[in-house]
Length: 221
Image (tube, rainbow, N blue to C red; front, side):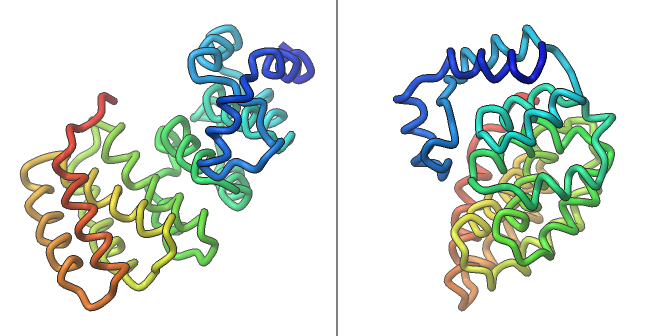
């Protein structure tokens, strides 16, 4: 399918009610056709993997097109340059989370980029760093637990950042790492307790929310 054909299909599958729901997740008005998940899944099945088309879709700036790009891109062809460029262009929690969950965690650069991004000032880039840490914990079952140890002090240091998207993603990351195994849960629970007792309100939020996150079942990879 060509870019024009895909965009036409997305317009046809759009639902104004779903577009309104996406606005509540930060998607800008008139930046989405509002394609429901079930219909997006059918479009993905028809297209398959296509790195070139994914780049074209991302370039449109439309939420639905960018979501589709994250679903059909080929992880092995994604570069650090592409990941950094897309991260800088995140403009909602919805597209940030979907890119991390659908694509970025499966790339060869995921373990390095998440650390780099948590040191960035832009809210959505920093959020992506923590979201990607959580995505690695939830969706990379073959990873060794030791690979997650270095993430924990990074998450603790974020306690001074009170921006909503950053602290929510940091809490998700710590909780997701903690529910991987008994060993990691012990380390993360201790970190969460330290943060919950910290003088920083942001750190307290991360610690308490991470404790709730650890109690949730681990999603299927």
